[in-house]
Image: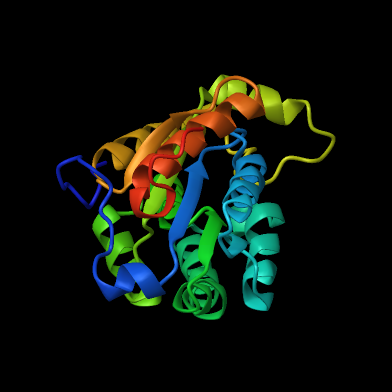
Length: 235
């Protein structure tokens, strides 16, 4: 399956002019199961706050009353009763609420939003993983987001086997996506790699190693991506 956006890979695009002064920044941490997204979202938010930036953390699906209800159904519902296109519509409904209630108000107020997942997850999971056409996903996603594009995607990359080994060490039941099987999760990981290569505002970050090591890699990417904010700061 091919990614919908085939722009040449280059520097992360930055807003210019008055927009770069008044509007906040939108950073998304992405990746397949077990890569450590939630941990790194918290660490990145803390780093930005120490730099004096106003930060809002979010997650998909979730964060709103609509989104949290959909999250419970998606993660813990019976997979056999949730056809792929129904799953897609639910995810997009949650995203519409997330953008309208959380992301856009924060960006308009000049805050930095750090999100645990956004639209790359849909292309990776429902596109590469489940087989829904990427063009259809792109059109529907554009409708619910009004074309909102993150300033930076940080895509954490880890082998499926290592990611599931991390999950096995956690004291909780696996959700629907974690239980979908290795073949599905390998398609998702391949999707993330290909999607990252096709977007100039996305970087692939190796997620192997201790959380602190991954955090340092992420900091370097963020500092390099936003020179107008961090200047020559070293991390």
